[in-house]
Image 1 (cartoon, rainbow, N blue to C red):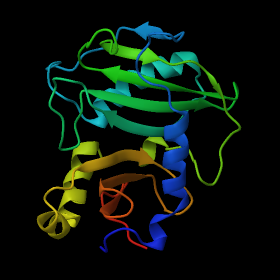
Image 2 (tube, rainbow, N blue to C red; image 1 turned 120 degrees about the horizontal axis):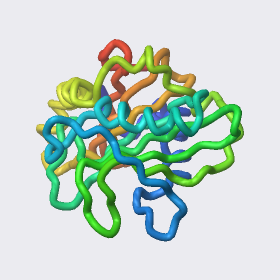
Image 3 (cartoon, one colour; image 1 turned 60 degrees about the horizontal axis):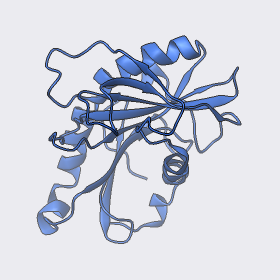
Length: 213
């Protein structure tokens, strides 16, 4: 895989990632009208968790909000004082949308509290108007979300191994699940460095294989 930037990297998926990022709400409930839901905890609540573990807790709350929900995006966030990496994190955010309600909400799941910004469990963000599915931002069907974040990270790191060896100072800068028309399945988008001098690996969330154009 060639280093960034390459024309193919400026795909609808990349555009969608930054569009959603710009619209996402912070997990901090202060100053916003958000609801707190007690989530079922993993067996070791002090340890970072994979995407599927966090997704399960957020999905339960999201389903109560809108039974017709669709998942648009799933991304890890750092929690101060808690180590993360290898596809696991102490905080995950999921963007769910409802076609019937014409809105989306950003849900978050944290394994530990970091007052006043982070509350343990599930936080439900405010509703934001949603115009519906586009080619750039497509739903992520549960049936096509087979590959968990830790497995995706391992595959992406193996693909980037030679580049990372030459660029040991470059840190992971983007790691998220999304779906767009450019790829046959939902994908894990993994980037080290930046758009000018970095490396991107695209891993299918269905097959676990690296996708290349």
